[in-house]
Image 1: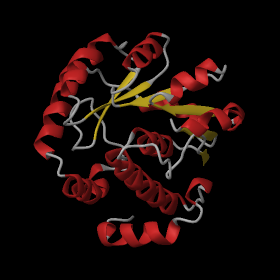
Image 2: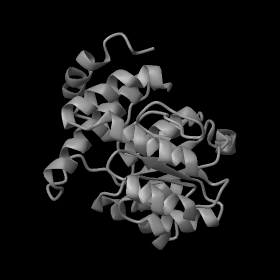
Image 3: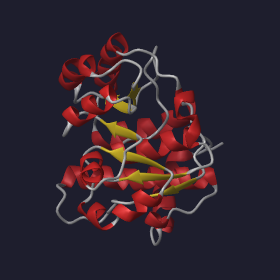
Length: 235
């Protein structure tokens, strides 16, 4: 995924939520000052493998074996803690630093890659936490245009960004333990973000010519929401 392809979707997300693009860019620029380049070929052993993209919904505790059986585990946010507490090694964590940045920092010091996301609402966290992350294990990301060491590989929430990252480095099959688009306990803003995560996974599914079980029963609705946004940007 390159930014030119992703940008129409990014613009639709900005419009839907009323987010400030300039704020995203300010956070990105701070991350660019603090981060060092992360060579994506470090993730080359994901190529062709089954990658578990672990979400942080409560059902993850029921889906632990799906992650355990995968070749590679990429954990979104607090999914990293849940899996590690159950003896499942995490190969990468994806986070926007809003819940468990201590876990992310500790993982980088263990040599586990962490994709740390900078956006308009977490500038203070970027300033506080990126300097605590180990160089060489930190991939700084943005939802705006990439600058310097800060990459944009696609995606919006921690979970779908993890899926786009796995796709970018050549993952074979993607599985999705710990995902729940209908969790009744999430607050309204989170529910809207989950709606977008589902749309983006559907886009990724189409690009990969793959079927993600987590989207079963949703594709027609998701296509109806996606197609006006994508226009001619699909490759």
